[in-house]
Image 1 (cartoon, each protein chain N blue to C red):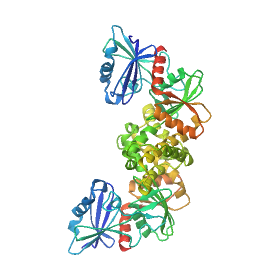
Image 2 (cartoon, chains in turn cyan, red):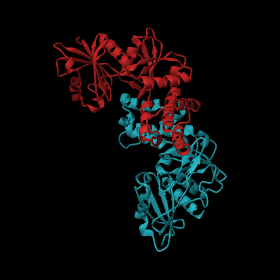
Image 3 (cartoon, rainbow over the protein chains, first blue to last red):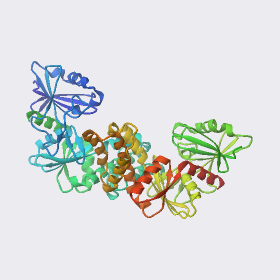
Image 4 (tube, chains in turn cyan, brown):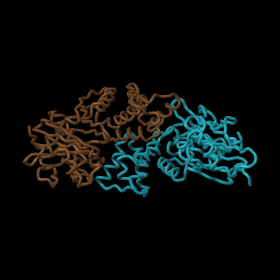
Length: 294
Length: 294
């Protein structure tokens, strides 16, 4: 079978491509040539290295989302302002290529002026999730390096809020004084729930709760698996406290990788909130497909 | 003049020594041979490299405080439990040396069991500050990498709380997505006050306020000097919100370096709190002197 288009998720750190026929995946490939490693002229060769084998005699449509459309990307695509549909028919931005066999278009990211916020890539996942949820009115949570809470009303993104929870966890675990007590790979589920509960019980404790993990390690020998899970619980719990106006009293759908979405579902469950979980990659592909068909 | 003792502040990153006669400084030296760069057998040579010229025929008393007394230090000195005097007469820990010309003693750090917390080095600054404040009943704030709020009652440390504010600022400014908008060296005082005010107005905003700095940089060209100062204001403001039970309705004395103490004084001033400021090095020397005399 021959692909009739190519789907591309081009983030800061990675490039992922799929050979598509309609909404069916024929083949998949990936590399670590993310936006942060490439200058403007490097994008086309990086893409061709992965997709050359899928090209034939005609012109292949390529639909891309993510940081590829940022100022440091292949071409800067202006943000669209919320409230708006996550992806707009006919609003893709074309990129000039040297190779005549490809026709590349990039999905625009979204911006919010007050409070200031931006997304690139998540709008495509949101469009993909909405394609499978007729008449959805509620909230999407997209956990990750910079997790997003997104209010949906009448098929549009009404507003959103970003948290640097994932990035903060990595910085603290790898570079801060806490790293001494977090080494290894284990996970203590009770520690995670303790962290979430602590974040809700003392929402103004601030970074004293983080230093407390180090102090417990020194004074009582807190195990690294418990400390790492509790740090995760404290940070995800703090995000939930801050995002309460999003998830309280509305249906919540998680869009993310399985393990991380599972932690968010567990933390929300402790607050009595049930939620659905959608796979992030499936949503990306559905969203790119919707963007292509406009 | 010949020194009659040597004062040593030995932290994670730096070693600082003073040749003392009574409470007078005769000479000063320093190196970057902090605790984190040394194995147990390296401490004595690192010290002798700085003080050899001050030694004479007799045995020179050396009084040290800081991370030199930690598990990764020269000798692990057990913490003393609060409530207690910041430095206890006769409770210094002797270290065996190869060189017979020095007699080294280390000041013990303090621990608190619930909530778990620890300090090493600050107890000496507190003792030094108390030596100049007869009958002080109130709060010390020691801003820094891991800032401390310390309640004092009847000459004792009643309790304390540590925040990783300074470390978090450095991690975010140097390693996070925010670094793109924080380059350069300028400072915007109005931005700092805006950050403090924002932290008090929306104490549960969490890391969404941090991502907002990045978004404003992208959407409205927020200047790096304003972004850096606002980040500092947000983090110091969040610490003040968390530590309100310490500084509300009690005299506050700052112990720290001039610039950082100035920021804390400015932020407390926005809440209507006046405070005194003591120089950290002067407090360290006064505290080591008090520890020596017991």
